[in-house]
Length: 133
Image: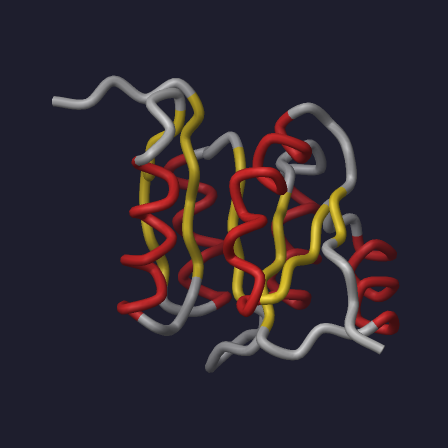
């Protein structure tokens, strides 16, 4: 049994992508995956059940996207940090995410930055990877 320090919920509609994120998280002995969800609605429910320390959430998902889910989660749990992942990042998306309380936005093409993003968010800092021109 693995003892988890930081409990992380992963919300993404791709099981394969969730598996990859789990691998990154498991590489850090202080982090653990406490649960997974396949869409925003399930993410809201899992957050209520599991009360994670951090949520890593995809933007584009069926039933409810990541920003809509974040709005609902942050109404009930205003202190939970959310790291938004997206394939298509833009300045406007980063601004929209920040305006609803999402602390970090990261492109799925920059997954090498995920550990740094997690560290930053857990320290209460914002993290936004470089946005292509």
